[in-house]
Length: 74
Image (cartoon, rainbow, N blue to C red):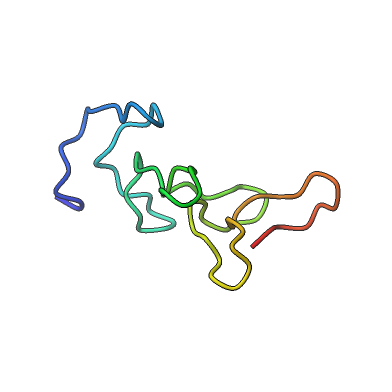
């Protein structure tokens, strides 16, 4: 009812079932962002930033903690 996407379907690219709205991001899971190759609708627990979004100013996907600097990208 939230996404109009049938549930119980595994996205072959992400192995994540589609048709589920992440309550934190309001983004349906199981969709690969074609720019970042990162599945959307997942909150990075370290940054609290949803993944799968390309920052238009930096062209860097958000929600990823750089392991060398501990600074979130994007």
